[in-house]
Image (cartoon, rainbow, N blue to C red; front, side, top):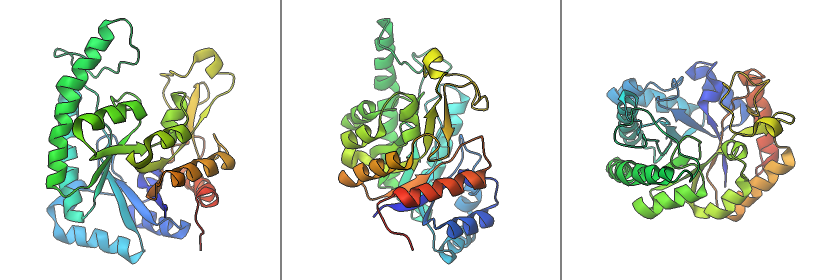
Length: 315
């Protein structure tokens, strides 16, 4: 049965204990904790928990007291960046794997990574078209020389840490960002990696998460409940490749929004129905980044929609 989870960054306005109490009050069953990299990790101190069994016992004890468990640890970042940032992010990925072992967490959520386009590159390079012809040569190099060797190494480390699954988010500016690229990576490195299906990213890339769910089936290891709205009157002029900052929501072609503010209840009911059809029964982890409302409001409204849409009864 699908469980209701929260990516706790959505309530970064609250300290740890207050967040846990609010999650319990809202009927949330599991929590997904960010450990760092692109998150400031508001509710989990990676080094403290890694270095102290007492700290881990206290942390897990609080979750147990409120009837909550950990759905996943999230270390999303770019461990393949060809610079100091990549080295720092990779180090944190390794630390997260080790902490998962200490906490008994079996699933990691992260991203595939994005390297440069050649040996000399000092910055990541996301190639999104097959023309001009040199693009395909660079893309082949990224996969052959960087992505595949890196993931063979990461999977071995994950296995040593007793991790069962790594769910890669279908985010833009990553080498794995859709069904095709995930399947391609699995062909090379095996079934340890699957998809963290986040509908919001596929929306702005012009896809349909319901179709992605049907295509991936058992390759879906985690689901982020996150919505995006394509902005009428703007995307028709600008297209969907929008580089304006997220804070410029009034002029962007698309925006992240609370659940129901981009796609209605009917859409989400069908999405969860399709997930059930393909056999997914894991966490539905709310991620809320609507900048037009405060976090408590956005999470509350999103939870209301999830309880109405998910194929289960609530007490």
